[in-house]
Amino acid sequence: MSKICQITGKKAITGNNVSHSKRRTKRRFNVNLFNKKFYWVEQDTWITLTISAAGLRTINKMGLDAAIKLAANKGYLTEIKQLVF
Image 1: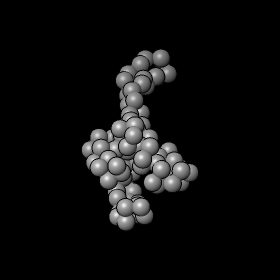
Image 2 (image 1 turned 30 degrees about the horizontal axis):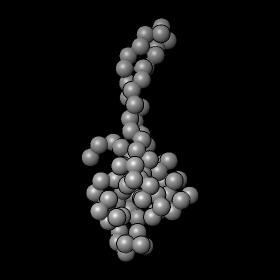
Image 3 (image 1 turned 60 degrees about the vertical axis):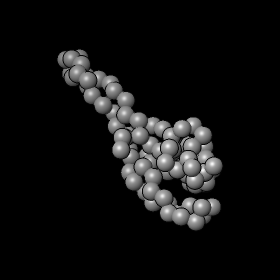
Image 4 (image 1 turned 45 degrees about the vertical axis):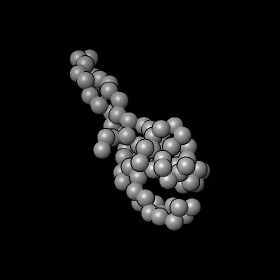
């Protein structure tokens, strides 16, 4: 599984480490990801999502069903898409 949030689509980006002498080397900025289990009331099932902290705030704000439908429409969720539609 790649390091991509299933709700927001956030993924790691690259940048530079800059030393005191302004020497630049490549580095990665990873996303704050974790696996979380949710009870999806509309489908009466438990699902496990790999989400970021921003994705968790989105679920808390919109609700699980609305966030899953939005993520499926944007193409971030592939394995749950058949359950949504």
